[in-house]
Figure 1 (cartoon, rainbow, N blue to C red):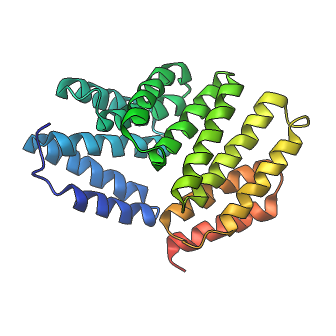
Figure 2: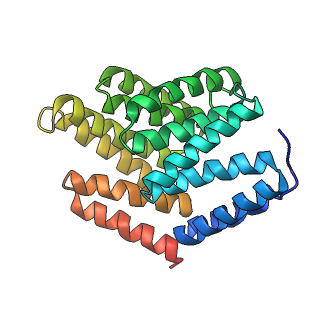
Length: 251
């Protein structure tokens, strides 16, 4: 892979600043500018990284066409570069799969998740948090496809990885909320309520026990708030939403 002529750490550092402020419009402009710069400079490494960031941002913004187009372009770039068995390629497969899943294409996502699994499990350490991200996202697709037992096993593996690597309480909380949603999908709301309530309680303990209130924590609180609201825990949903707002605003 050619490249390295653009200071990627500066690009990602500025991106983090925008995301910490929840300024997605500025983040999009920033990434789109640097994609054109990377293309003009022939910097393949930066181009692929920026494409990965952009597809994730478009997904968060609910912009289906740009997200799908960026995912397809990134996959084509991986193939053209001849790096299909490397960790960087697997990360692109994972990001593209997550885009497909987000827009109702779980069947298309699953083979990409499986390719990512093959590479990650061979190349990464067992406690690498990237494995947990893979297992969580793949499980979500499996729930959509009705493969509940397989999804539950992956959530368990994700929790094991996160616990082993330490400092991942927000991500563990999200996994427990995913397990709550799985219980509802598998058993329905009434039959699955005991499991749902138990996982909601575990997620709350993890969120309240975490001491690093940064942009990632704000994002997780915002994401979790909607789940608590859905299950009728309105007061705690409001607490998380307000906490997220205050972190983003720096108050």
